Amino acid sequence: MIQVKWIRALGALVMWCATAAAQAQTATPAEKAIEYRQAVFKVVAGNFGPLAQSAQGKLEVQPAAARQYAERLAQIAQFAGDAFPDISREGKTRAKPEIWTERAEFDKLLKDLTDATRSLAAAKPEDFKAAVGAVGNACKACHDRFREK
Image 1 (spheres, rainbow, N blue to C red):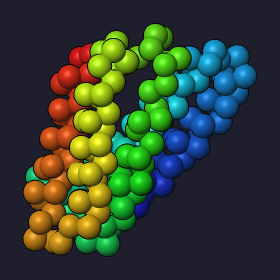
Image 2 (image 1 turned 30 degrees about the vertical axis):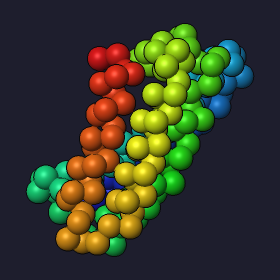
Image 3 (image 1 turned 45 degrees about the vertical axis):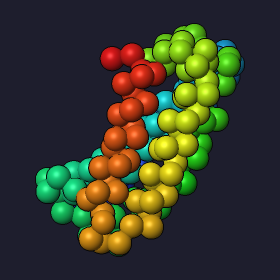
């Protein structure tokens, strides 16, 4: 069941990339930066979602799949800081202006996220639920402070 969902999601991502590539020819640099950011966080959500559902007992995820999601998440989280260049301050985005005026605090929260995702990727099975919770808390802290609702 999960594999079918991921195959469909991958197909949708490929289609989105093809569409984005076609649109990129006419997109402004700011629009391209925002599209990149949104793509990074869609991939973050796609890998974190099953882990969060598993930790909540809503979805059964095999240990090997959970490890793969966690390892991908740890890698992808490293791209988050690069997804907020100055040029992307304005446009169709829910990123608050405070990201750029309070960059040190924002960067600290991004570091908390990358640290939490690394801990999740290295977590023992008995620590999985707590490690997923730490990633969720890191996401929430940044969203609460720097993302429009």
